[in-house]
Length: 137
Image 1 (cartoon, rainbow, N blue to C red):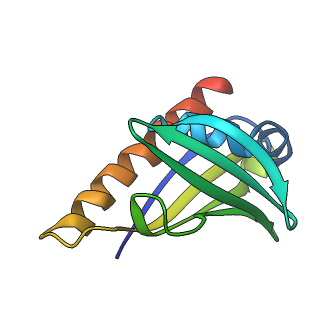
Image 2: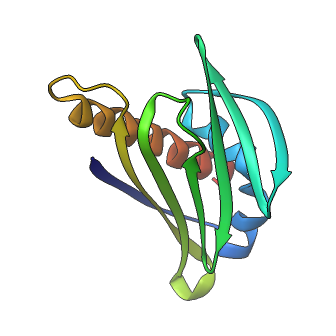
């Protein structure tokens, strides 16, 4: 299992970002999957994301000052995927440091798979930050 992080300061308040960063928007911003369906279950939002030949249910939960999501069940490409999105005020609250932290492990046991998974996941987190920064530029 590997952990990756990415962060960027965005010219918007945490409240402005929170109002626009819903689970489907985050999945689309990462750029690897499209949103196929969204539903509420047990106090969480489940986004079913699809890609070439697969579906990945992602379970989103609000946890104190961060948004947490994980692959739900064992049917996706990961044996482990957890991501935390944290919004930290900067510049007296007029800006926000968006921090994405993720742990990932692929559901195959080949050499270097976790390293490859981390490299791919870092790219997804950077694409999400690019999207967020563009939306608030």
